[in-house]
Image (tube, rainbow, N blue to C red; front, side, top):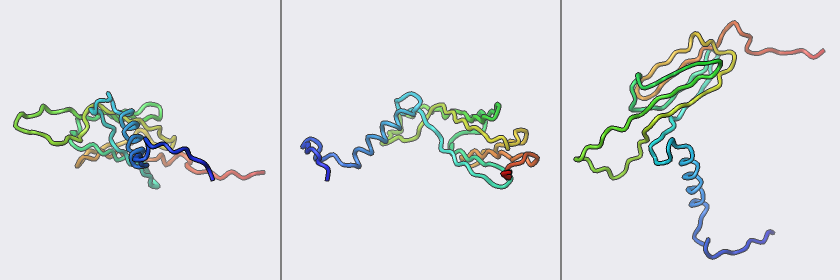
Length: 145
């Protein structure tokens, strides 16, 4: 059994409050400018026999707001959600929507056929299809001699 020193100042300090402190610390550390204006869109990546698929959740943007580039195996998705000027007739009680620029980069496997990468934006989801090159040998079994 380990001895733990009792500290009365921490008697109301729970694991939940410690977790919320950590969440706030790491969340603020990754925001664009630390004042709540940046955001990092969520990305889901899946794989099928023929391709890799990326789905980026970015509601409220237009397809013109995105920049997608591919350079030497690195796919970069960037864009900006612009803050619309507030109306004086609207009084917000809470505002959780994040605004600002974002950039996400992904190192792609060699099996991606970069000439056939395609992107589609619909209903707030940016879908990027990364077809695999059928000519490249994706799996190989090596026999030990």
